[in-house]
Image (cartoon, rainbow, N blue to C red):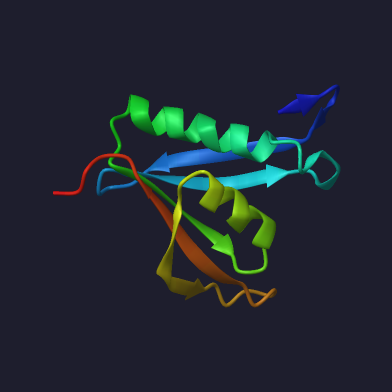
Length: 105
């Protein structure tokens, strides 16, 4: 998402081998947050997933991004029980969220 000459938001998605889509790299610039831009970007990934008949969308998000967690929950994603540690410089630990798009067998 551009605002004039500047990028204020972005999102990505990649197909997974098991029939899902992974939502990656959701970012909204700090001064553009709280206006629904993140939810609109999430909606674009959901459209992308539905067009490809994906069974689900999942994502990993830093445990510290509590505002993002609220947005994901409001969009129908469930916080899963598992976490992962990236063992990076920031000591990142991530939660997994998932939204089922088709009925599970």
